[in-house]
Length: 66
Image (cartoon, rainbow, N blue to C red; front, side, top):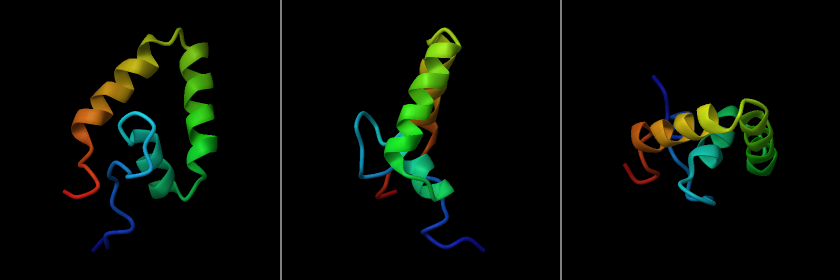
């Protein structure tokens, strides 16, 4: 069984919606490094897929208090 620290959820440490912060917490990475990586990968993939994935994760991932 998973405890609260290993569940994938949006973070309170947010720039827009907390998606990258939540992914970074879940992976054990630095939120800043993950955000930079996400932006670079999104730009290299013509930005649209990265934006679409971010929006989907925003609505699918539970919030920090859920």
